[in-house]
Length: 326
Image (tube, rainbow, N blue to C red; front, side, top):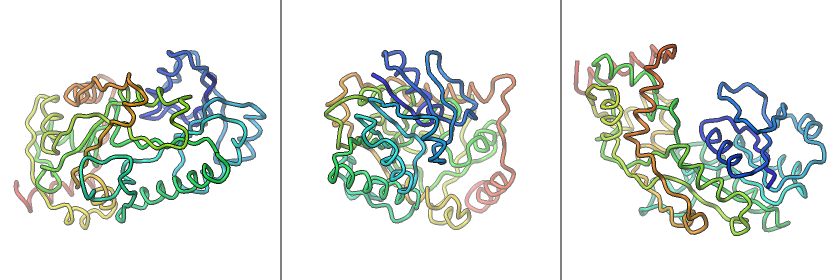
């Protein structure tokens, strides 16, 4: 199987690339060569910018692929460009959408692929929905061989689960209180990128995946209170949690609001029956307790320095003083 990854060195794709190679897939990456993550051995790399269509046409030439995956499409115009670029040149085009595109808040749980797509809070999610609609039309009108994959919160050792990232871990380590949205009891799913890769690579070249959409997530459901406590425990400290209503947090930090109200503040668990029916090898084996240890080990390793955002740190101080702990 010959596959092209556009991107291929991000948080999610960096686990899919080596697994694809290990399974005998002849993998080529098209990217700008600016990622800090290494390219796995045995991968061909073509340097080019997919957002420059003329440059992409030049570097890709007339080559054909069994599978093309674009990891970095976010708006419909990028999908339209890819359809033009890869029409007749691939047997499967995989679009990376988002589980945040599902109805928010969901009318019922667990969320399935049949759940309506509707997120009135977050433009990012609405753009992903619009991308899916372009692909569905292309599939209906010309049988463009598309597959849609909707990751949820997928992480590697570099990605803390908090909106403020390392700033929150730094506060925990220093014994400072941290803000948790709502009452901290909403359910959430965190998926290790190596677990996601098992399901994703299994869909590559799978004829039954054409014209279909799948989400790929862990079956471990945690409350946000548990998530904060697990990270703190991995750091050998206690999470001093201060609960603040999500709508207040959205007002105090408008940049955080859409992702909070349109995603994290709602209980969100997903039924993975569909991906498991096509890819029996998809079994998640990394619980977040182990993943949190990887994250903390990364940020506390010699030579690695996390970055504290002073404005977000000050906002945490202000909110903690106002809502619970001075």
